[in-house]
Image (cartoon, rainbow, N blue to C red):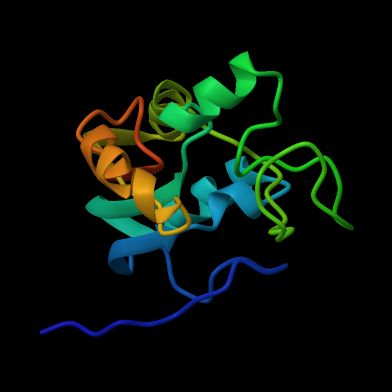
Length: 155
């Protein structure tokens, strides 16, 4: 029986020996990082060969972002300032620095030495109530989903 340990990607990397982890949960983090490449390198280091990476991140190409762009509106999840929201729906600055489409996320993780097992989609809690059924429906297609859910294995 295993146990869960929380680690932070700070200056010296994760406080685990190489190959010590069976799985890493990296949920709603990668979009906030200045250097996501180094983060995946560090996750790959601590995972044993065949170890699992479970990653989630907002989808730049979510169904509503496509419509917003066609209307000339800044996509949800994207930000042009750390002080205030400009040009997009919502009022909360969340500090997203990186945005991924399903294709870009798959390519990024593969280039970092992982085999993608599954790329799925999930709804976003911030979608207005009348649009939630549509958001759940869009989750069936990762390229349109609000949130990208990726399961990969270390090669």
